Length: 392
Ligand SMILES: NC(=O)c1ccc[n+]([C@@H]2O[C@H](COP(=O)([O-])OP(=O)(O)OC[C@H]3O[C@@H](n4cnc5c(N)ncnc54)[C@H](O)[C@@H]3O)[C@@H](O)[C@H]2O)c1
Ligand SMILES: O=P(O)(O)OC[C@@H](O)[C@@H](O)[C@H](O)[C@H](O)CO
Image 1 (cartoon, helix red, strand yellow):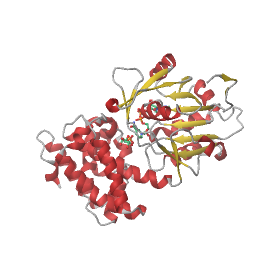
Image 2: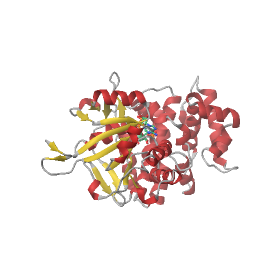
Image 3: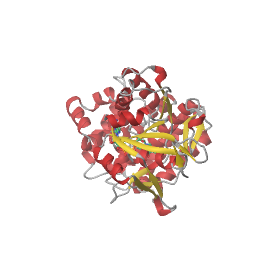
Image 4: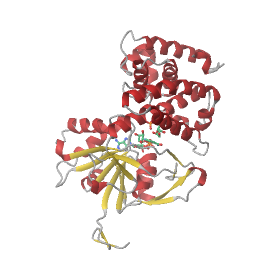
C-alpha cells in the first residue's frame, strides 16, 4: 500500500497508535492485533535498553506457542523513552494510545500525558488500558486528575487481555504468544472509529474484567504460588500437578458458585469459563513461566484483587475459604523469598499486619489467623514438603 501525506492510496486514514509499555502484552499482543489495521505504530517504554533495541531494529517477530502458526512480523515507526520530549511528541500526535505497563505504573503514564497539555491538540486523547485489574481505567482517570489533566482532555476505555505472551529467549525483541486474536474493549467508552482489528465491542466491560480477574487470574495465582512452593519452574507442569489440582478443585467449586451469584451468571457458564482458563494453563505448549504469573505480590494481594476479593465473595456465599487462605499464605511466602518490599514489610510488621494493610482485611477477621497459620507452616515445611492437600 503506497502512502501520500499520511493517506494510503485507497483513501483510508492511517491512525497513529502509541503503545505505552513495549513489554510482552504491548509489543507481543496489542501490536500484533494492530498490525491487521491501517496504523502507524509507535512505542513508549521506561526501559531505555528496550527502546534502543526497538529504534535500532524497527521490526520484530511474534511467534506462536507450539509453532501452530507462522510468525507475524511487526514494523514500528519509532519509539521513545517514557518521560522524554520524544515521548511527549508521540503522545501529542496519537489518535489512540494503548497502555500495557502494569496497573501500578499508570500514575507515571498520567504524568507523561500531562506533559502534552501545553501542546496544540484539538481532540481528546483516547486511551485504551490493556492492564489486568478490576478498574484499571478508573486508576488511570484518577491519576490523570491528580496530574492536573482536564476531564475532557483524556477519554479512557478498558480492554481485557486473555492472550498469554512471553519473551522469546535468545532474541532482543521477539515474543512467543498464544494463538488468540480477540481483544474485548469497552464499547460504551471507545468510539467505534477506533475499533481496530481484533477488537470486540463489549458493553459490560466492568463485569467481564471482574470475572476475568477473579477467575483466570485467581487460578493463575493458585498455580503460580503453590507451584513455586513445590519448586516447579514450568507453569504448565505445576498446573498439572495432582496435589495442586486438588487445591484448585476445592477452590473452584465454591468460587464458581460465589461468582455466579455475585455477577448473575448462570453457574454452568461460569464453570465453563473457569474450565477454559484451566485447560489453557495446563496446555504444555503454552510455555508460560511461574515468575511472570507470581510477580508483584503486593498488587496481587490488594483488597479488590484476585485472592482477597474471591476470598470475601466465597465467604459471603457461605463457601469453604481454606484453599484461598492457603494460596494467600503461599503468596506471602513467595513475596518474602523474592520481593524486597514485601520481605521488608513482613519483617517489620509481620504477616497479620501485612494482610490488613495490603489486603485490606479487618482486624479480627478469622481468615487472617488462618492465612498466618498456613504461612508459618509453609515456611517450616518448604524443605521437606508435605502434600498440599494435607493442609486443607
Ligand atoms: N503477558 C501476559 O501474558 C499478560 C496477559 C494479560 C494481561 N497482561 C497485562 O499486561 C500488562 C503488561 O504486562 P506484561 O506482561 O506485558 O509486562 P512486561 O513487564 O513484559 O511489560 C511492561 C512494560 O511496561 C514498561 N513500563 C513500566 N512502567 C512504564 C511507564 N510508566 N511508562 C512506560 N513504560 C513503562 C516496562 O518497562 C515494560 O517494558 C499488565 O497489566 C499485565 O497484567 C499481561
Ligand atoms: O499480568 P498479571 O501480573 O496481572 O497476572 C499474571 C497472570 O495471571 C496473567 O498475566 C494471566 O496469564 C493473563 O491475564 C491471562 O489470563
